Length: 215
Image (cartoon, rainbow, N blue to C red; front, side, top):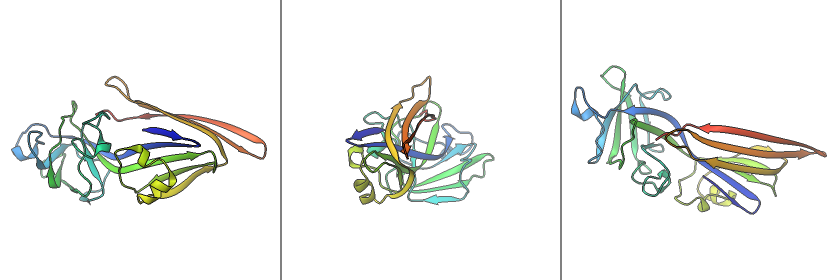
């Protein structure tokens, strides 16, 4: 999501560090499938999570299913499509070959099934803040999620929420950030335009990134 206020443009993303496909049906033990009609505290993913070392244990990560960014199915609301803050997430290699077992404490009920059984392991929010008055582009991470981006679109708000800051670029004269959400037919697209100036020389930079966030 993107917002701007005065000289500041803020881009915020929920950083997914890994993903897998949850088991929707047996074979074998019925407890290995993910249930959507009630809370569930354990399920398997087929093929496993390839990007994390196992056993994996965290109370600062989240699991998200079918985050499509609309009311009721928006991970920033911290309900329905994402586990609550502080949920204990444990991932271990299962006795079934090629699968991982996921344990949740407390149990959680995901409100919507993914058409392709996708589940994402989310590290948390990240904001890129471009300020043409301070002429900086800064990355903020390690802070708490807020439902409204207006509560996380300034340096003071981000630091107050526990963020750590990393300077990405200085001498920034102008910047423009825009995001086109994905659909069932295509991925999302992030477009970034920056102008950097120093000693009477100016360089204009343009970059586009595909956002692989199919629900």
